[in-house]
Image 1 (cartoon, rainbow, N blue to C red):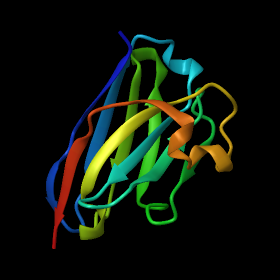
Image 2: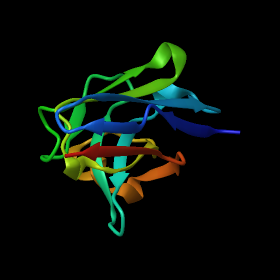
Image 3: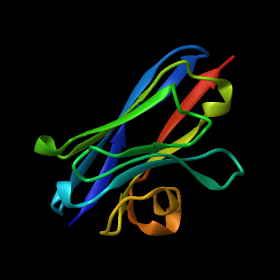
Length: 128
């Protein structure tokens, strides 16, 4: 059964770093663009970053550009999110998601309705 499982969350002080991983199974990993979203307490789920199936195209939310880096290792079905210079505002549950097939472009990368499979999420807490 296809599934996505996140790991790597935790508690870190402001200015610190974390690296999130998402292990994918059940489908041909490289056929799908992937994304990271986050959901803070009482807030909507919002886009963080996305990457095309081959890894050559990436998009970021303005709030994380220059601090976060999305990447993927298709050989071992893993999606990564390197998060540096973390801020208290980055505190949220981080979820990885698999996008429906089709070219990754800015308009669909940021739309959570373009993603059909989600992990359970991993908690990231940044203390001030």
